[in-house]
Length: 260
Ligand SMILES: Nc1ncnc2c1ncn2[C@@H]1O[C@H](COP(=O)(O)OP(=O)(O)O)[C@@H](O)[C@H]1O
Ligand SMILES: [Mg+2]
Image (cartoon, rainbow, N blue to C red; front, side, top):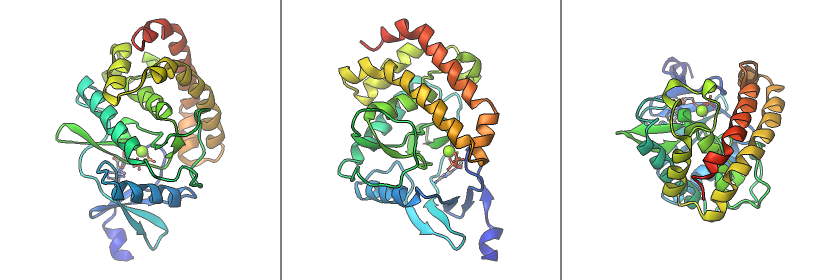
């Protein structure tokens, strides 16, 4: 065990999970009640031939999950903010969703979160932020951090992803690289690359609004559990959701024009 600890390299970039480390070609992450469900999903994805997710190695002597380390970079940069990257994230999300076909959607144990009212169609990642996408050779190659994965609709996962990547946010809360973008055009680009149907496009902004309201309540409840969620809440996460919802309301008409 001492030998293991000596070679642990802390991984930064996430804002929730304390104690994510790299050990050789693996990462060790604290496990939760949701870990068995997530591992069964990751094993399904491996069997389905989906390459855009880490593989499950097992559990270590400290009760942490062991996943393969996915080489590349995470986080926002000029390349990740580009329209090309946005379209490629959409394609990767489509591939993920398609690869969950056949996975039993009745599987229990997922981390609770806001969701769509419609019946689940896929297992969504539900947290596709720039910190949770690994880029390599200029393109998004894998999603990591499946802690919030759960059965949902395709559209709900699309909306969650667009919240961070379009982004659907008040510009005052956006990193400079994501400010001043044509958000409506990026919504359409993402929907086109994903291959989202007309009905889902028409419902996209309504679901985004519903998600904001539900996410606010979910985040507040999670913050009460302490740790990284409490830090996010204390750092203004709730206010950012409120501002994003207000921004969506005031830009709804022009955004909708890109989705018909
Ligand atoms: N399997 C992995 N392969 C490569 N890098 C990883 C992996 N898991 C985590 N990381 C790195 O560690 C950071 C934080 O890990 P993450 O699992 O996203 O934790 P959090 O729950 O805090 O967001 C990620 O943004 C990424 O840079
Ligand atoms: Mg993360």
